[in-house]
Length: 281
Length: 281
Image (tube, rainbow over all chains, first blue to last red; front, side, top):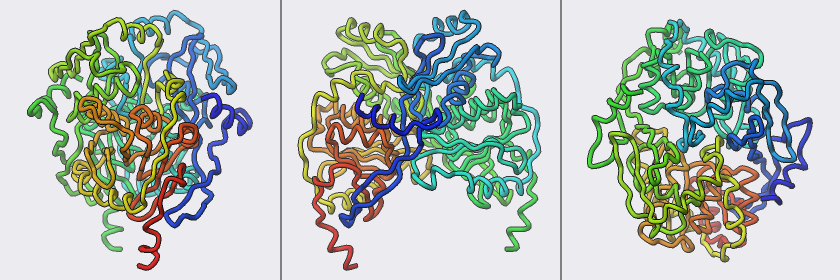
């Protein structure tokens, strides 16, 4: 792997990896075509010198990703517990130092395996009890806001439009998109959002989490951990994700494209203020 | 989580979970609609009583998934090392017992963390050296075979057509689809294929691995571990996956839909026997 590693290191700029590479491929007519592909970096997250996880990431938000991962997986509760965070691209590592090393050590001994990801390995039932103890407050959301957000998001998926092969995740307040992150996995994108919210002290309770990816149990649990009561996705839902959303009282809207969407849970929180408009069109 | 667990247990049939559930959602017009969603089960893989990983799966191929995971991650080299495999749906666990417990124990002490998945956690560089020591033989593949395979695969994505939200993976020989597996993650689907190949002693060297998912480093590494020299995907590729494919000499074709495809690596192995036909249409 050393060869590959050396090659993409040439593209390091301003402390982050260039997310897009130009390559050549041969099309169905045998013609050579130049195209853009996304980078993928095996970024090792070390906490107090201990290797916690290797995150396959596009590499443009390493600090936010590392922090969000630690927060969303329930490893570290308060941002104040973190003494420093440093990215070391030579060794493809993010080094996090905590103030209270004992806390992380407790986690490590509790976990025989630290696993996570998209259908393979998960912290599914780690500290799930804590999430189940709190319910989300009732929200109210206009359908016209959903439509406005979907239009807005279409302007921000820059990497996807150039190279494809990424998922996007957005933090929204009303019809305003506060931040938008693209990464190889939808989990990484959600974690990077979480990391930035955590760093900047942004509360989740009045926000909407948008994702291009599917609504699996892990995405619902991440939203819950970020205390965001509304999840909006371009894709569908799994049965387990739906059950968890029902249990926690999360409003979940999927298959959201243009003016179409399906409310999987929390329809009582949606104000259908846009029906009349588009039935007339 | 106990509530959710109990609910989908009602659907256990013949030793596997029903992959599809009927639910109701509210559409953009406020109308109640019945639709199908896929199941998602947190299946714990235990080896010799030790919890190795939790796999979020659709649940219809638990044994093949568990075996393929162990094989693709390089935990167990030979199928003869496995003494028994049993699925325990009550505890959402697959129990694998090995003949040589020492081998797995060696792995466990080597790994500080066992991680895997889609952009979050990976066994990326575990035993990568072994893969890099062997190169793939030169293959020859007609473009017309690619077209025929893509048509064939469209008939097999049963769960996707009913409920969406799954990835599919197929093992192909010439224009014949030998098996097709759908699961929540593309990694699981590839692992289940690997598990069935391993059980039935099917060699990879004359096969093609098809996936609906993106070609990330992990999918390329899985194909390499299954000794399959050709990868075909409906989606795009990451730069790291392309570099690994080049290093190993894998033929990789992406963005394959209908008559379109891009050959990312190994174009010299493709016979363009279909160009004339479709330029005339």
